[in-house]
Amino acid sequence: MSSLLNQHVLVLNRLWQAVNVCTVRRALTLVFQGHAQVVLDRSDGSFQTFSFSEWRHLSVQEPHPECVGSISFKIRLPRVILLMVYDHLPKKEVKFTRHNIFERDKNTCQYCGGSFDRKDLNLDHVMPRDRGGPTTWENIVCSCIECNTRKANHTPQEAGMHLVRKPKRPKWRPFVQINFTLHQHDSWKHFIDLAYWNVELGDEVR
Ligand SMILES: [Zn+2]
Image (cartoon, rainbow, N blue to C red; front, top):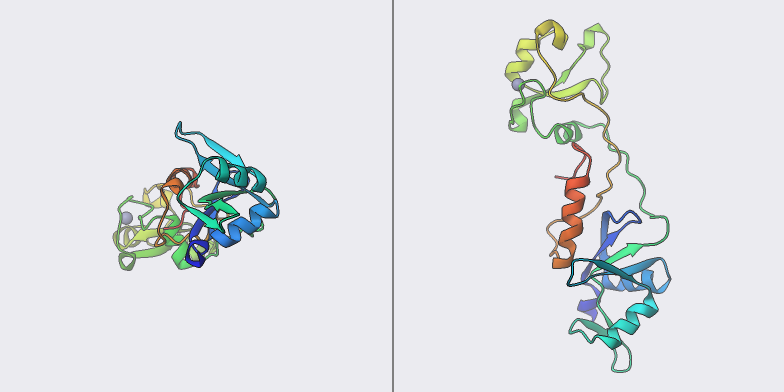
């Protein structure tokens, strides 16, 4: 029973975005307190949400092999929950780091569009530093060594080069703290896929 309570549940925020993973124990507590509802995928592909009492009722009405509790009180394991309250997860500002720039630019040279190993990429000031170009999200891009050398101390325009994409500050990550090495329950797939496709480009967790 305790191992069942420690299994993982996918947590969705109010926008139905996957934001976290918690234990069954924590999920049931959140649902019991009214902070979350259980999400169940129905066979027709729709999703239904359940309050604690509704979920308990369903657990009795539609017995399921995955239950926790005692003989007198059984409740089905939730696999996905939907937060009802303002999601307590802080919006994480993406730190301005080398790693995150590589991540935003997907290890792709922003001039020729080629993919490279990180060791073969430089960080390039679009407006050169010694011409007043700041070291900011909006002025730093990944560049391969060849493009970097070609661009040298010029603006892209002067060098006859074009940025693949205008660099910008990534927004906070809606998709935080999901450890993909965890076993993923089948019912997570829809939300994980959705998060993958809806996340702003350059902003997703690798
Ligand atoms: Zn290049």
